[in-house]
Length: 251
Image (cartoon, rainbow, N blue to C red; front, side, top):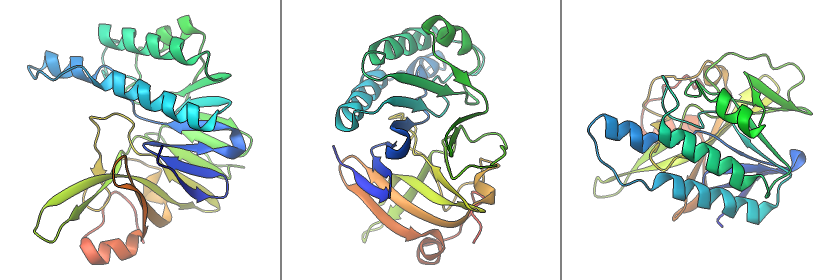
């Protein structure tokens, strides 16, 4: 597995992090059931996302042997219901993982309506809007939260990515792990774990989170299964080289 140490107690891998100090793999934005949602809209895609997601999670667990797995929101995709595919995939995933980690925690995301009965049946807690473990906190990122006594915060929701243009004008989009500060709290914005959720460009897209708009001293780390994990440096420098910045990341 490709990995990179990005802080004293933090390792990045495609597409999540291992936080050594809380013995946890933290991932976000699985969006299980996405293929069924596309199918109902008349778009046919092969049902392959869940198999890929499951393989990647087990690969990370095998690498880090964590005490806990934390999903920072948007386990499922549909807003208005829990689809048949979501019920099946969420249930199978949790049951499969229970023997591999001591604890599974889920933080509620904006897509996680109707997730409660699934998790209740599986005896998995649903934290809303925040899970705190020591001085670390995990939120989805779509709501404002209080950061009292929080040293490190992990969020999802934004699906950060960056588009890089090659010498012949071709464009390639890479998912990113974004880190910065809100006051003295270090904030990490996780890449989307779903294979279909490639991401919103941190340079070009509108702000999606009330948390990211407060962040300062932003750095961007490109994360890719094939290309590897590469620090691209301060967002301010990237913006000067490539283009404008929105997404609430102010300099």
